[in-house]
Image 1: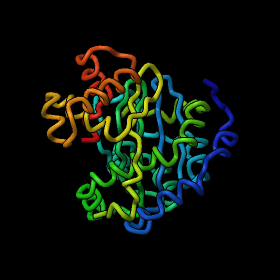
Image 2: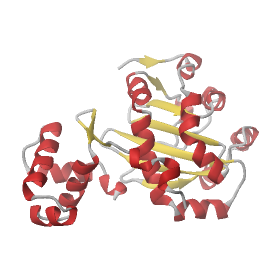
Image 3: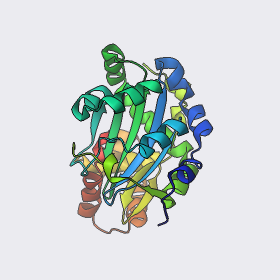
Length: 263
C-alpha cells in the first residue's frame, strides 16, 4: 500500500468541498466548524479526509499530539475539550482556536486492523451543545454510515494512499431529521475482514445483527416479516462475502469488529 511522505502532497488530494457539501446540514443545524473522517492503523499509517485542508495539514506539520496511541479495546465517544485538557499543550490549544476549532466530539470505532474516527467540532467550549449531540447520538451514527456510503470512492482512494503519522502526533493517551440528512440513502454497512472492507446491504446487516444478538432463523424472519428462506439467503450471502462457513465464526467476526456500535 503506497505511503505518501510529503504532507502537502498528501493533503492536496483532500476532497474538502465534497466533504463540506455532505456535512452542510450538520454545520447549519449545530453550528459546527469542522468535520473529518480519519483512519489510524497500528503501524502509524493514517488517512484523513475533512472539511478544512489547511488546518489538518498544518496540524500534522507542526507535529501536535493527535490523541491516539494504541488501538482501543472497544469503540467510544471522545470529547475534544477534555482531550485538550489531558494533552495540556497551550500551543496546540491556541492553534485549534485560530481555526475556530476547539470543542467537539468524535465517534471512535474499533475495527480488526484499524480505528476510524468521525469528528465533529465547533469553535468554543460548549457543554450544552455537546449534551445535545449525545442526545442525538443515533442520528450521528447514521450520518457516519451515510458519509461512508456517499464518500466511498474518496475513502477507497485514500485507503490505498496513506500518510505516515509523525511520531510526535501519536499520543500515549489511549434532533436531526432523517429527511434532512437523507439517511434513507444509507446502502452499505462495512466490516473489516482480512485487511479488506466488505460491504453488506442494509437487509444483510439487519439479519446479521439479529443473528449475533441471539435470534434464531425463525425469530429473524418474524421480526423482519420475511421468510426463513430469505433469512438463509442473506446470511449465506454474508458468509460468502466474508469467506466463512460456520455460524460461530460469523458471530465472532461481528463482535471482533464491534458492530454492536451500530445497533
